[in-house]
Length: 627
Image 1 (cartoon, helix red, strand yellow):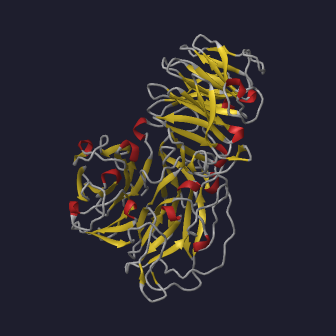
Image 2: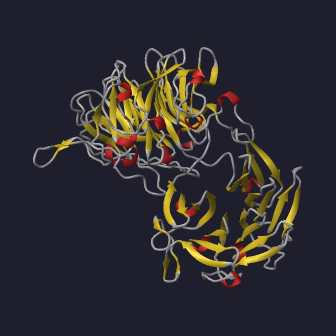
């Protein structure tokens, strides 16, 4: 039951996550337990890390990426000394090798690939036969026009000119298509100065990007984004705050020159007229509008990896969906790794299907996913996946040995129909009832869909227009529904993320709101000082699960906590402080509201009442026990 939150939470978290399990507090928790009625004072909701942690596996310090006109991606795989190629289908291979620590890669309009060889102090070109030639630089560190010193970032303009961040020379170099090298900007001495051409100063610039007639520079050591007008060579500060005449390291969004701060930004890329910055020491991806220079955080902090293992030795990359079968096996939609992972009752993590194993060998073609997020398991052990960016519902059917086959959907759309005649738009979650009927949170269509055992797809609730309206069937409205769960009576529960509400759909299609005021906030069901009722609040709830007693558990994503709704509609917080795990810290494993999460996206409940959480930006699977 994984989730997708379009337009509101954009997450692209990177790097490895560290394993650590912290001590347990002894404070009591007044929240009712898995069944009805008050809980004994000796029992608490205890949070532990169930899986996740370790070191990188597939690449070794990838530094830079570039995309060609066919949507092939090239990666400067620095410590493996290779350029890797990732096709549009996700197949990874070694494109060229034999470099001296490559850190920059660029592709021109003809498909020629250029590599900044950091420790080789030169620019290499990969020929069509995969051979290598030196395009610029003599291989010795230096500051003459024929030399570079630890070059890193590169960009190519429409005329085929290459711009190089000549990092240790503190300058920006230009190489024409004929191989003529000149200095575009930078004195060769580190510092900070806005000026023209070689009168300007940079400090270890590491990234460059072309937008029209301007070149933007990630001025790493100055914690700034600089702008160069290519025709005049005029250098100005584009984004990043100054303090006492120097760039300020920090992490703040806002107007580029007055408020925004970066910490060692290294990578910079352009999409349309917007800049995206790898704000390295902040572990963030930042977005800067051009013009305007308004800085926002585009993607959160975190650490990534792909590794099978036991408990915290395993790694995930933005896991967004979890489901548990009748034997206690947990299935995880490991979204960025494009695979489904399996966790045994003893915590052993393995790849169930999909993805690409460490190295160059792709998984089985039918089992390739594109950012899978939602997951469900039926009573026969069949696994169903909301393959979000493929706009399909996939199945791993045990009886027929169908692995990753498409049950319904064929590209983005909103059509009802049978099998691939139907279409979805970024479906984020699936649930399956005791009769094998699938229910889909069709997120960008703002609807809930139903798939029969024969593959017939119908819309059971939602008009297709974002809004909030309790009604029957398609007269009702949702706003980016992201999670769906079904109880033993066939009642559906929906995490209506954009409405900050939890909705209920009866077997006859009647939609009602069971919790949430409709305003983003953080409040349990309570009474104020005057005895007036306080309506519970959520903040983009993204995942739901229901236990046999009818209690509904909610991954309250932007509140970084797990909530519980009793059949009497009483909302309590069972785990999470309401604040996210601190940057660079391991999540706290503790009792109840002393634990910390970072954008938890999904929840699942086993037959014993244990709750499992896809703690997305902590890259962990957490377990909450009531004991």
